[in-house]
Length: 274
Ligand code: ARG
Image (cartoon, rainbow, N blue to C red):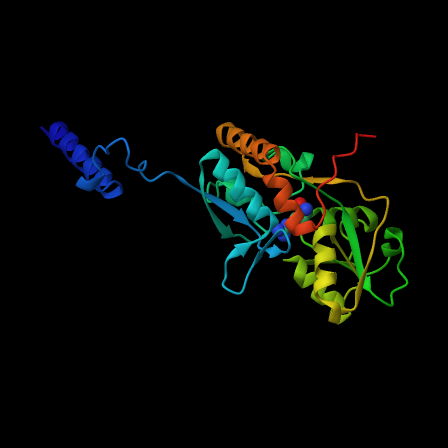
């Protein structure tokens, strides 16, 4: 008796739980005629740290815009995926995909072997390099000049990594910021002697903030980095869709068009590996 009623109770609870999660489908969405649009498709949530113009930033209206955004939108269109972009702080961005809060990430993310241990990356979609920003009157002319100087970086980026390698990870002269624009503001305020970040972002900032009186310093010791779109480790199905979409937007000229819109000239073919 007891067992029976316990079982009945459990079934009842399970049914209640189920009905809470899945309200009965409205009658209107019952078997759709062939011509009707497909039932609401999955919306893929894309995480991006939208403080990284021209790759991702928020415009006056609050929309997330930029090169990365247009590339992912074009890829999604090819792949028949619906996407939604969510501003996601860089700190914790990798966790957000690991935990399933985001399905994919586009955030000018450099593909590194360390990151590959916890995430899967698409084929590379952009080549980048570190670049140094300094005040116009600065004497700094090489990366090595930064050895004993105060340098601003965005915490946990590849810019952070190269400076940590130069000065030592624990160096008190590395000033780590939540975002790259904050590091650049600190340079303007005189709190750091230089900022090291991705070339596209540094160039964009210097060009659009002439009142900051910055110039750029490049250094041949900086390796070429490649950006990739990240998914949760093991999500081969999504990765394949993205890679197929990337190949499609490259093949039909869409990628080139977006690239030219943001960077002026069409991308040059990747140089053969040295
Ligand atoms: N490419 C650099 C890295 O992967 C910086 C990326 C920062 N991206 C951003 N949206 N804040 O570490």
